[in-house]
Length: 121
Image 1 (cartoon, rainbow, N blue to C red):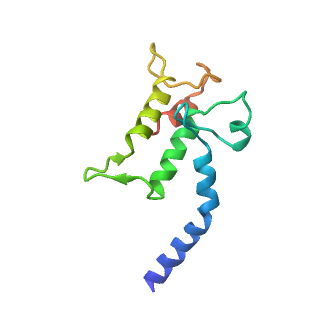
Image 2 (spheres, rainbow, N blue to C red):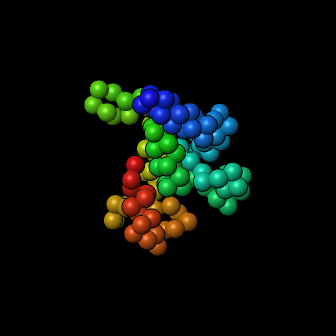
């Protein structure tokens, strides 16, 4: 009986994250900056750029779906090119004075909640 509940729950999760959803997530990745966009509308509008929160959320989603392998210590294993892109993206947004990560659009006006979401990765 318990296995049937687990099968049902996993089927519901699979239905939520179908191929189209994963294709969308992948399409939000910006290989030039190493970050992720929030939405198609921001990706397709040159006034916007990838942001920290979307990048953190995308990577958490990939991990939560089991699409990122982990080593024996639980560390995520990314391809080197991808890992370097994410590191470069985040480093480009770290303020040298206070160490926080800011998206250029927010500069240093980000509230405490936004700063916490930006550093949750």
